[in-house]
Image (cartoon, rainbow, N blue to C red; front, side):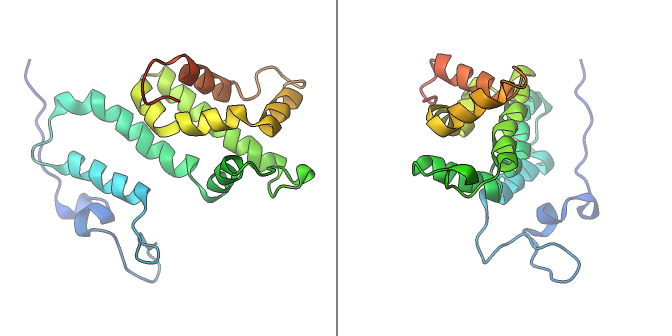
Length: 184
């Protein structure tokens, strides 16, 4: 079996960040740097681009890279500003929902819990290994599952349909059944 031919793309076809490092252009282009700090997402993106454009790139590594790809794609969505504030409220045992004295609407909490659906789907499709799931999301899933306000919210919502937050429940089940040392 012959290996696929591959040539390094020219600089003009690469993503802006991969061609010249993070963009600091002003005007119509979006800035990739924020106050001089490089985010985890942009670092992961640059690492992925390095692997993709590296002359040492080996197509036999592609299945392993799929897990990193889905983690890379899901990281900005999961760790958006609202979700990180919800995570902080959970970690500090503060109220979450506005109706309970917190700062978040039902829709914001639903979006946070709904993001676990994407994670569960990636895991079911073998795009995210158990180890990657544990390393990246088990802490957040466990904390949310142990939060009494979230437990009550899920219970109340499931009165309207048993399938609500199924992805969240699946991720929690994977984490709790795992023997992986990175799952908590």
